[in-house]
Image (cartoon, rainbow, N blue to C red; front, top):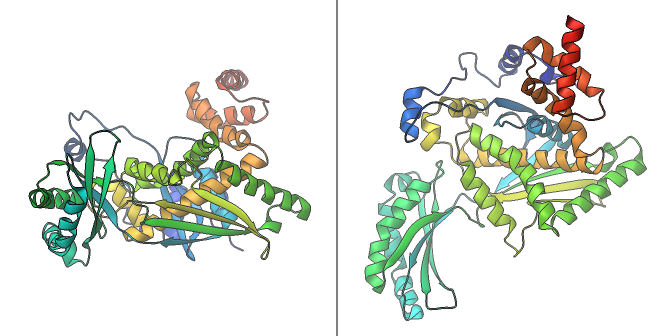
Length: 421
């Protein structure tokens, strides 16, 4: 079987780009560009200059039967390598998006007779949704926009009683934060007048438990090791590590951080809001009253497979905001075949699952440091001042050391220069 990405990491930057063009992932006339200063100056306040992070690509991905090369922006060594390795081992990853709805809240305070005011709002629900849609005409024209409205109340056990109006909205291809905030602030005064209660605030929520993206992969247990008994032991360890991550928040935090290594990297590369995605993911991980794993790995004894599932809310878009003005975000989407928001969410979830599989598998077999520190050697070589022609020699030296640290990297560089002299 042909492996076009074999030893991809050993190729030069230009050779990688040429291969991606040859395989059809990149169009010859397309090339990444730096963020122009005049554009950056309008993106943030008090602009001075750009802070750059490296963009690389994860390979070996097959998602819903389609091949992908995935752009990832990250500064940590081993993240892209782990995602590529995990994708290769998982083979095809199946993804599904339950819906694309986001949620907003209008909160009223000093509310008396909550049940009566709840009823008033519900009796006017259809009219309020019509008003809401008038603040999102462009989305409504595209078949999206406000979908539903419901009410809840909250109390802190003291004097404050809050009445909360929730509104769900399909943001089409946008992430939708600005759009839903416009809608919420548009209808809030109407509701306030209707129930004679003051508005505390109107804002979207970065948590939407009904809008979930799921990625799933199945690994034949016998593929885990050439020895069948060893393969079963590894599968059991992966399953047990997954169970433990649901019991211990100390482990779950690190477990999920590894998942977000992959997810955030793609979110950043495509110009999306990684902070919103992080907030939603961690809220979802706490939905059962304690912080748990975002993934689940279990053995299917009928098929003799290790089955992995990742589920989380992903509030992302493919138009508007940073995406519309950042040339590298546009380049990244082009590399992915210009997916719609739903397909992009699936790609991002698939990367998170592959990242998690690579990490957990390493954790229960060789340990996490063996692969991580080997890739970290390049960063250490640069930290201690190795020149371009010295880096590979320093890495080779470090590979034969019991420990890899800045101290051993300095010793390696000293030895390289001594031999060169």
